[in-house]
Image (cartoon, rainbow, N blue to C red):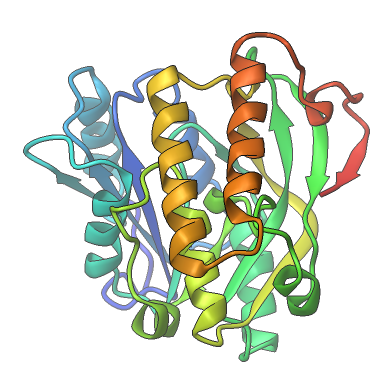
Length: 276
């Protein structure tokens, strides 16, 4: 039985939501277990999976008491599941992780070190290696690092790789939890809301996760939900040219689905580094 010396009061709570992830979740959990930073708890919220996901998680939880499984009776979708995990988190630092991504061994160590040295930062992300539909590294993408740069991003740009972030509890106390009213864009909405609330952001330049893209091909249902969320967000935030930018981003996603366009970030060599 593996357990942190401070399991009752860990430095980091990792929140992961899972829905029918039997293909990838073992690798995702193993990438948490092999972190060089060990003072963590992993809260996995299963969102009504119908495959073997729950039994795979249970196997890990039986071997490592830092891993906690919570099961939704029915599918609640991502925002609600993440809010459940955040509500159960014991630590002041709350890290996100996805059930189909890989965390490199020094991810948590580097993020905790940065957060300790920069107490004014509320949310810290990292760069990421992109994986194509076959799970191969094709690129390393680095997002803007300073709060000033992140504040100036246009509506269509991402502030963070969502599964790379580590968040101070006070962020949720200030900005609020994830809003289920913005499915497939809940991360963009909460980061914009956090900026409005005066929260401070940063990104590390190091790629500390392997981010599964599946070629950035989404289902038509997912594309529709994302588009509607963007339009709602543009209206709520009164974004200048927001509807046009939301339409442009939706058209971009649809073009990938129709194989009319291949994302530039997936066309670069495995040693390339792209700044977004």
